[in-house]
Structures are given as C-alpha cells and as structure tokens.
Amino acid sequence: MTAPAVLLTGATGYIASHTWLALLAAGFKVLGVDNFSNSSPEVLNRLRLLSGQTPLFEQADVCDGAAMQSLFQRHRIDAAVHFAAFKAVGESNRKPLDYYANNLGGLITLCQTMARHDCRALVFSSSATVYGKPEQLPIREDAALASTNPYGATKLMSENILRDVEQSDPRWTMALLRYFNPVGAHESGQIGEDPRGTPNNLMPYITQVAVGQRARLQVFGNDYDTPDGTGMRDYIHVLDLADGHVAALRYLLQGKRSITANLGTGRGHSVLDLVHAFEQASGRSVPYDIVPRRPGDVDACYADPSLAQRVLGWRAGRDIHSMCVDSWRWQSMNPHGYAAPPAR
Image 1: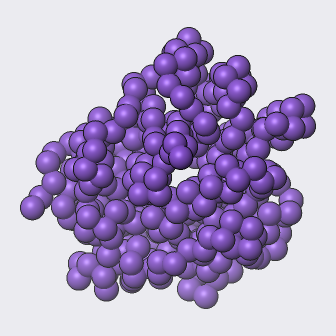
Image 2 (image 1 turned 180 degrees about the vertical axis):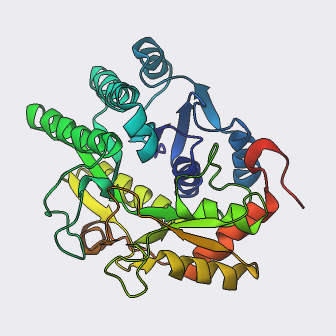
C-alpha cells in the first residue's frame, strides 16, 4: 500500500518541524513548503540528521496561487496540514492588514488549489485564542467564541471559512485543532523554538534568561485570581502536539467526519510554576521582575481535552518537568538558535 502523501505548510516552523518528524515516523510521505519568513533553512539540515532522509521540500509562499498550483501539479498530495501563518499577538495589533492578508489569503489559496486537485482532507492549525476571555474552565469546544486581537480573529475567521467550505461541499473532511501553549523541544536538542527578536512566548524568554541572553524575565501582573497571582495557562509539550496532528490526520484519512478539538493537557500552570519548574530542571536561576499586566491577558486558560482523547485516541503524556528539561537542552545546545551549529 502506498504511503499517504501529506503537504505540510509552514513546514520549517516550530510546531511544524516537530510534526514533520512525527509524520515520517508514522509512515507518511511528507512534502514541506515554507517561504522562511519566520523560520530558518537550517531546520532542513536538522530534519535530515534526525530522520536519516533528505526532506522533500519546496520554498514557496502559500499565498502565491501559481506556486501552489505548480506544487500540486508536480506532486501527489492526499491531505494537507496547514501551519503557515503569522502568529504574534502583539505584532498583529500593529500590523492587522498584514495578518488578515497573509493568514486568510494563504488558507483560501490553499483550499482553492486543493479542491482543484480533488484533495479535500485538511488538518488546520487553530488556537485557544478563539475562546477570547473564557467564561468557564476547563474550556470545552462548545464554549463561546471571541477574539481579542487580530491574530485571534484570523484563526476564528479561518475556522468559519473552513466550515462554510465544508457546508458547500461535503466531500471535505477537516480537523480544526485548537491548541493551547506549546513548549518544549525535540529530545535530541536539534530542533526547538527559535523566535526572532524578543520572544512573544514565556518559555523561550525563560530559556534566554537562563542562557544569559537576557538579564531578567518580565512577569506581567501578580494580581490575577490564581493561587500565586500570576496568569495560568495550559502548557503542552510540542511533541505531544505533533502526535495530535498525526492522530487527526489518520482519523481524517479513515473517512471520518470533520472534528474541532482542543489539544491541551487539561492542567493549568502559573507563570511562576513554570519559572520554578524550569529552575529545578536546568539548575539555572531565572531572575524576574513583576511588571504591570498586559491588556487582554486573562487570569487562567486551560483545556478540556477529553474530546480528542475520546475521538482521536490522543492524549498529552509529557509533564511540565519534561517540557522544561527539553526546552533547556535545546537552548543550551543552541544558544543562538539556528544561527550557529549546535553545541556538542
């Protein structure tokens, strides 16, 4: 039997690169596409090292209809996993038009090209940001949806677009995966999160303080309604997240109905929980300052992941200690990210 061929967009990004390895290990044939707008070509060398095979890859922009048409004409593609998107909340507030044009334009172009080539199985990278300020915890998939920034709005609009597409043509089958806060790295230390400029997410900021790139961590607010006053989030290991995409893809390729599912652990950890867990895992001190809250931040946000467990047979298995150990291994081996060869 021929291995299913999967198109992976945004393939050299943080979550996608880990998903690429998981798909290969599960027996899929993977074609990666990326324009390197927020990632490094060095990822391909690391994937070659880890998988023992040369990655099948094309440099292209998903918003480029001609490039996507050419890609589908030259390759057999049975399904797509769509990661390619701008993803920084703060930047989306400053550049909303860029976010709408790129995130919605890329999705529409991909779907148009897929339909043209009779390829209608899609795993979509959504986000817990579609829940806005949660009214109830843990968050279930049937919770009210809202967006508090343009990035979240593009994810919410993308979900609506995909539901309309499926409504218009029931041959489509989709998995809309709403994930919470990805952290961690591959256990080899060869691939991990490599943000450009000041990190938008907590874990890479912590690791950059620990490795000496930044002097102190800023903790935004300590007066939230949580046990220690700092915001609580559902942190999920990127390898568990990657496995969730494999499970969703297998589910769709069995001809099952579309699904919208949370990918999270179901547990909340505060900012200071993560700082202390990281200090214990790394043996490094992470000095921090309490600074004012950021507008739009919520007290707590964590998933009810039971639907993914029940329908996809998936659950997160790695704990916060593993997340911290693997994050530190990546950062200590790659103090400057992909810009330099890893330390041995």
